[in-house]
Length: 478
Image (cartoon, rainbow, N blue to C red; front, side):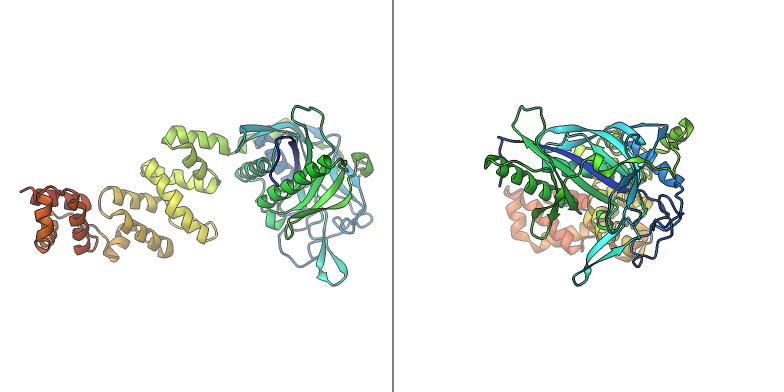
């Protein structure tokens, strides 16, 4: 069902991001993905009596860096709170989070909306918390298994204002957020591993209204594409309920990607249902101004700034700059190719085509060193190899390594620039096609391309095309 202009969609997003640490938030257990169930646990993350949590400084450092990358105000004093609820994968009966005094507030993130151009979303808060374990419903018939390896894994929760206006915008915001966090080195943001999880609050209202409609929260969304699908389904459900004269009930909905449907999980809790209170085992988290300044100094150039610089410094289009800065590793590689002597536009073309295609097939590895690619680009520009030959050389460099000129020579791809040799090939071609020569001399100038193709065929692609064309023109007008 297509969206109707009679309704405005309002979306707020809560993103849970796993911080890139080797150990958990309050204990020394490993955060490595894929270990056998319940092998990365200890008395602290199992919630055993008498076990006391100790904050992970590396996690706090990354959380502060994430907050700064999103333009938040980092508070020197924040408070850990207990969020009380019962669930099988939460052995303590509470989750350590932050509530009234979070680590950071008042940030923002701009992204490109396909409908509204550049949109700036407010980041209401960013707080630190621990993850819960995981309930597994598909391991044993008619039983639920619990894996507590994720219990205690460090997270930041990033909460937006109700600023997103469509499912497609939600996806665009999340992709931009992922990019910023990856640039800042905060998280790998891998949704398949649970490193980035999204809960979305959605409501609809009539255009022009300022009051928000009754919202529902959509959970269980495990890909960016599914975010858009899940919110589209839930938006359409809200509209159908309201247009049918019903009332939307505030509840938590689960998205089923197999059937592209949502179903109610439970009535939506309010914050008071969790009985938040400061954790008596943890003192307030105090981050000194010099600690915050240190993290600010370690921030790299972020995607938006890098994109604009690429346009200004390298005379690239916005579109090319967006492709080249999509991943920090690719952006750094591109600049290395340019710094090694390649023309910026030529380097951009090679990176966006051959390099990224090869990386896609080889787990995102950039297999040809930047300096070697710059040498190969110079060989094309200088006429040593043509573009098609250079692509063959690139494949060989990616597969087996080596130096571009050596590889091109070994493959017999070096262009012949000897005018005497090219002259012989031109003579052979003209002698073999007397009828075409007569037609050319009678005014069929387009036959020059035919002759050039024949020369390249005769030379097996080795003739320098520019020299060959010049030789043909000289012979045919003699």
